[in-house]
Amino acid sequence: MEGKILAVNISEKKGVHKTPVEEGYFKVDHGLVGDAHAGNWHRQVSLLGIESMNKMKAIGIEGLCTGKFAENLTTEGIKLYELPVGTKLQIGDTIQEVTQIGKECHVGCAIFQQIGDCIMPREGIFTKVLKEGTVKPGDVIKVIE
Image: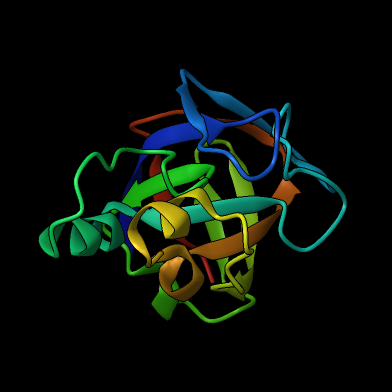
């Protein structure tokens, strides 16, 4: 199973949209360097597929772009939310392990406040970094186990 990275997104504060960067450096026991959600915990990196965003667009939500759901990595080609916890992914130079599928949407979620729904709690996933390195748009995502 293979997909690709469409965008690497970062924010300095929690609870805001993330903005795309040319590449990100992902550290073991940390996540995306410079991102507000990084740290030594199980939700170091957030991923959301463009396919999930397109579901929101299909119901008439406008103005959606990468980073709008506060995801670090916008992907294409893999149904992320169908991957079991523990799945290992090679993403660019990194190896990451799926640690959580979905999440509880926090009260201040900008998307939920704007449109009354958010796909991230249902279809976003979280990983921890096992091997550090860079990730950039166009990089391949491979399910390795």
